[in-house]
Image (cartoon, rainbow, N blue to C red; front, side):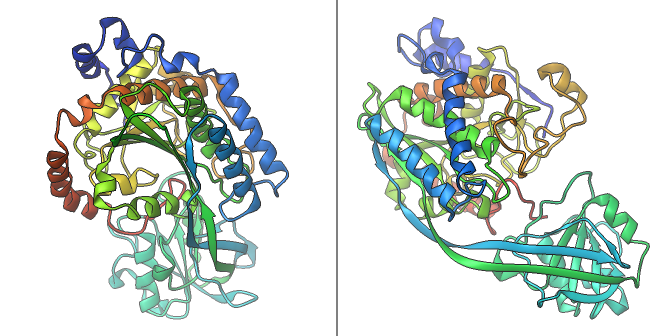
Length: 503
């Protein structure tokens, strides 16, 4: 995360050209007599979170895609939207879901804390027993065959995280005959790793913390017992897509949030918070608002399995249908208990990680800055790292942006001084755990972000000129075709959900 503060100056300048001066403080707003965000309350948003918590409670404690809790969540959201007069569909899609039934790791007879990397192949029943070997630590640990010791064949090899993907590390080890790999973190905290795709998974793969890995590095030759019982199952699940019955259908404002949780818990912050904020915005807007542009809301399935729902949705659109989408706004965690206040870095002014978003993304970032500044909140930038549902939209040249309150990252002293909360602690200490329940929400952050996103969506429903100017449709087509190769290349590779690291 960057510490750069986003100022709303450019957004305010753009708004002044199209809106009454008194409305500038409400972000990219319109001539509406009252901002939509003013009608959003934290209590109303929290009521949706209560519903999602209760759905989880009666469905084995979770709302994971392919399981009953997710289906009940879809029914809840779709029912509310239909009642508000939206045109609602719940399109189905099928994917291979990864299930980890059990995991254990022991070294030199001692149980060792860790976890299977997502998509790790299963071991035989009873696990594998093999000696520990240790790959060299250099600038590219485990990325080349020369990093591995001569006796790596038949061993479980310990590799430090860094430089190349987890998938590449275990593929190199597999080519050398290793029986399995243990990858240890190079920063504090859990690894939360994925091999990215079942097709890339070669040998059983575990992840451990930096502390565990450093301790194991001095135990070359120790007996390792690794047991991973996992499986892939074909799952059919649904997205929820709702569009207003009014507004231009060829200049659609699209906003989305993933609705699924991880299997470990109810997923109230991740991502009940974004789902609830978006749902309350849609309900307050209504299915037939007086707007210039149509607004399309989406709740994605199988985000936690690799951004599957959003990716399949975009890939299922024709070029003309993609061209109808003026921009995409993403809301993935907006109520983290040790909340940060981030907007996606549309102009890459932070110069961290990926480059800028498609043309228009910089203006979206500034418009969110203005929306939050009107509530006294200064935003910071966060990278378009490809770990949430904006990924496929960006890959197709569609301008994107959104709000985010942080996940496993750790709050800095400067951020705690600016926003409150506790420095040195994760933004969400219960991230992807059973503790992500109704007690895992900062209600102030939830309300602020819900109001901010509502005002930005309403503003774009009236005008997207700041994002796509006065482009004619054929001009927009040429621009996106020109951008397509750049963004498709940048996002190439398996889609990785925000909760998992590919490298």
